[in-house]
Length: 269
Ligand SMILES: NC(=O)c1ccc[n+]([C@@H]2O[C@H](COP(=O)([O-])OP(=O)(O)OC[C@H]3O[C@@H](n4cnc5c(N)ncnc54)[C@H](OP(=O)(O)O)[C@@H]3O)[C@@H](O)[C@H]2O)c1
Image 1 (cartoon, protein in one colour):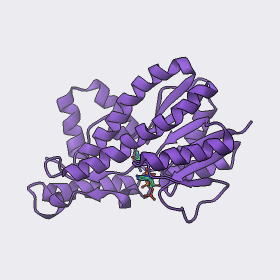
Image 2 (image 1 turned 60 degrees about the horizontal axis):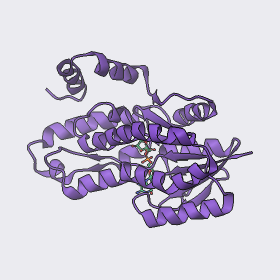
Image 3 (image 1 turned 30 degrees about the horizontal axis):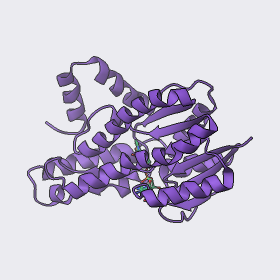
Image 4 (image 1 turned 90 degrees about the horizontal axis):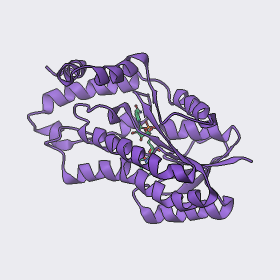
């Protein structure tokens, strides 16, 4: 029987690549999107929903369940990044970051769990980031949102094991997607701020890493293999060797040594 997949954020990047790949295989794919994606290929069933809006999520999940009767896999992917100094970030900026990247995942999980528990098993995939494993300069609230996803996923995994619901976390490194152009820089840091010059230097390095990053189709292929596993690991880092090494160094080096390496990578003296 074809598995029913629900994925968020299908208009570009990972969401587009994953939904197109899974729809070309033995999956029935539903995508939640704020707008009708223009150039999506394959038989993806698009439902309009904003992950920050519980009413639209509720309606979307109800529509899917009416049609299919079950949800085998939820892929929480929709997200964005704000970037700027922590000091300059407004309450609105921080709210946007956390309500999309963290509460958006929570909203989706809470909406699908009653059906997943009742059907006696499922898989939840949370797209986190290497930024959920280490703080990154000028991406403090982005990192906070992904650290939150990491912590919540660890707890959720234990709570859902008795219901045969698996929780898998994916930690991508830098990928070339629309994430870079969709990033929202903190205006106060851009315009008149003691951080301005350093921020612009660091932001251009962050963007260079992303633009030169791996293709989202690579992550989609890796995830398709992970979804076939009977006993998947709790988490997977999908990144270049250098970025995987950074995660290892973070674990083994003294904090002061690791943060000087990272600071130097981002041009901070
Ligand atoms: N690219 C990277 O280097 C990288 C690395 C690590 C982790 N990630 C994570 O990967 C995930 C996907 O990012 P991406 O790189 O594929 O970026 P992307 O190309 O910008 O795609 C982001 C997707 O999220 C959707 N989205 C944003 N806010 C939404 C909301 N409130 N409700 C519904 N959909 C919303 C966007 O839809 P709209 O068209 O409606 O804006 C878009 O489809 C994110 O969680 C991101 O944090 C990315």
